[in-house]
Image (cartoon, rainbow, N blue to C red; front, top):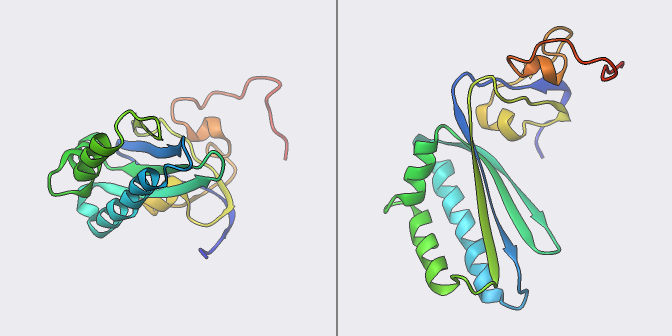
Length: 174
């Protein structure tokens, strides 16, 4: 288990980055062979990405829901170009997995897949972690910034360009 940082902290990244959410949903539980095909492709892809940081993958967190059986990977990438190159690269495992999915599962409805991509500019994000091990973007960037009194104390201050006063009635008193 990771070491918990007994404090409030944030993270900072001074260049653009991409947040890529990808997942699978089992629509027909007894189509076991089909959804296992999808779930078995993820670890292979992640292993390649962790073994080759030059591909632009910064890190990610995986989640699982039991019913309906659903997985999600929240991942962080250096750029959209890196993500796209991995997705389309003939020497990377994603392209073959995608081609197999479309050939063997296609639009049967047995297994759902989805993704969302967000391009984030420097200072156009906000993060807070309290009593957490390195997690999410902080883990991906390996950059921990303790939160102390001052401009970075609240979300508005951490989100660059939004440092004006908190509207009346929304103040938080600790």
